[in-house]
Length: 190
Length: 174
Image 1 (cartoon, chains in turn red, green):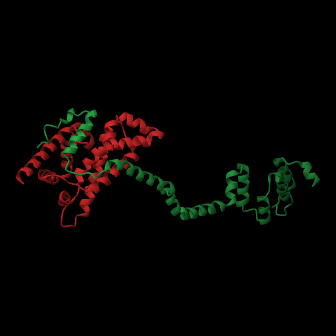
Image 2 (image 1 turned 30 degrees about the horizontal axis):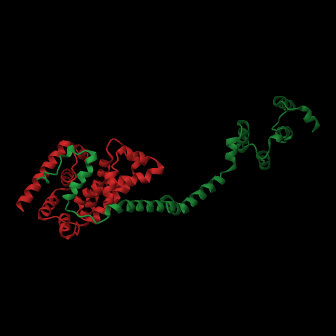
């Protein structure tokens, strides 16, 4: 696929991207490269949280629009990826919160609705084990789910996770350990 | 619970150049299917939304919306302010601009109860600097010729003239 080729070819450093973004004549080009470099990882992170492709698509678009609007305020004390990751995480959490509020009076809760998406959504191809795993992850509280996904699927280091979530490494390790235990227990008992 | 141990690398060992390999591994274990061509089109879709928003701001910026809604009360407020500014009484200008002597004179004319002649008050209030000598003369003349002198003697009148340092030649001519 074109994007894979571009990603493989054009894996640029933060400094290279920021140099392009800082100039008027290369700003759009730099932003296009930034999106192509990070979009897949951001999308997968969001998709794991919200399950439905359409929701993930909205959140990812909103994330990059926020990145565009706030590039001037990006402080280079963190990596571009962790900064974008943080924006995406906040967008996803806001989405889940508003969806939860909208479903407050419905008979089914948000978790049930998300679980339903594992079966109804045409874009889920997991086998039985994958379904159980996703069901177990959906049972976790939102933030614990984020920690688990970041570690298990996105393979971020604890330092990077700490940078994104603003939580200490020790707390993240404890959170992941508890989450992994819960997931393991659910999969083995269901 | 771990993913496929054979292909999974420790997160701390994943280096930037190998990110693509990591992406490939993640894709293999991903249960979520992405529509074909999604990532190829996503950047253009995002830029299209950004451009659209930019055009909306240029054509119909928020401040112009606010201005359109606020122009009536702003116009009214400006009119009221202008009205009160124009209607400021002229004495204020005189009071702020006049020298101490003129201001003092004005106040003495305004509030001195001995000046019963309204016509004189109006005349002296509208006088210019060029007429100042004549005013003094007139005041002096009035003082000298007034029938209501309350028994002022001639010597007192002469003394008055001398005290005020009037040009006696002028008096002689008149």
